[in-house]
Length: 378
Ligand SMILES: Cc1cc2nc3c(=O)[nH]c(=O)nc-3n(C[C@H](O)[C@H](O)[C@H](O)COP(=O)(O)OP(=O)(O)OC[C@H]3O[C@@H](n4cnc5c(N)ncnc54)[C@H](O)[C@@H]3O)c2cc1C
Image (cartoon, rainbow, N blue to C red; front, side, top):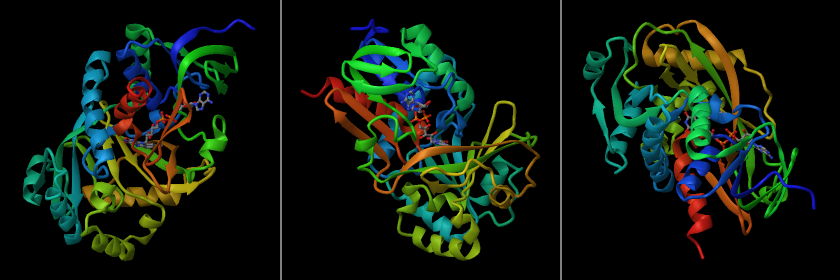
């Protein structure tokens, strides 16, 4: 038998946020962990996102609970790993009476922990720069956290390596798993358990198993705008988010809002455009996004889609968007029937794919679920 690259209690495939969160849950349970990723540095959804750890608006029950747990762990891990929390809280701005009805229903839903409704006057007092003339109400949530993912994810990996002895094998593709053998593009290693956290790659590992699920990809367009010259009071969303995030969209009044938006902003709905604006430590704004679904989406940023995002920015904030500094696209896994896929294609193997674009908000809870699945079930 050929020499192996090492023996581990757990091999994690994928160094995105789900893989790193799983590695963290494992080292806390005393496991010796290797994380393997085909890329030389993090390059997937986990570093292309807003870094917005969202609790309010997550779907009732399991997703909301995962987000609350994950938010708590993010706060602890960020402090320990020296990852700056660059923003806290969320403002959902509403410009229509139908949106206000959704926010009022949300306040009564039992999921409005740390939330309150602000009148337009209160909101303007707190942030005079928000000058949308038709602002009708703002939902303020104090729970959300935000990290700058492009820095936070590499720092989290470095901390797992330096402070918790997690081994990283980068530039290494995993081609096959037959526990304990893990076949990679650099040779074989051995692991008693394997957690596969492949993001939106459904064909490299367990393709036949994954073919049993209605998986596809979602492509998003993102922008970075120059510093507007003031600090936002928190992450910002608008009316369009209320028909997208299930914690709002599943409330009864959301149907009337969706009908009105269908008449007033059909192109936004057609391209899945809703508004999230977050602010970096240097003042620049990350603004998005759109949602286009395909097995292999095209890789291009379309100007008309960016224009829709900026139109909503203008309407929600009441200011001209600052100049665009950067544009990029990202993709994440999507499924029509679930928000998270956690499966066991073999006894000592788990696979975890977040299929609703909320991986940064739910990763640490999912990591704990995977490790508990290995260690706590007889
Ligand atoms: C533009 C955008 C904005 C978003 N905004 C937010 C947000 O604000 N808040 C939020 O909660 N979520 C957000 N999301 C969703 C979130 O980013 C994802 O749910 C999350 O990053 C998924 O993490 P992951 O680790 O599963 O995937 P990834 O980050 O894609 O990592 C998967 C890794 O697995 C590796 N891999 C796969 N197969 C193999 C193999 N066979 N061998 C070796 N390596 C392999 C890949 O190289 C990759 O590095 C956003 C997503 C996008 C694209």
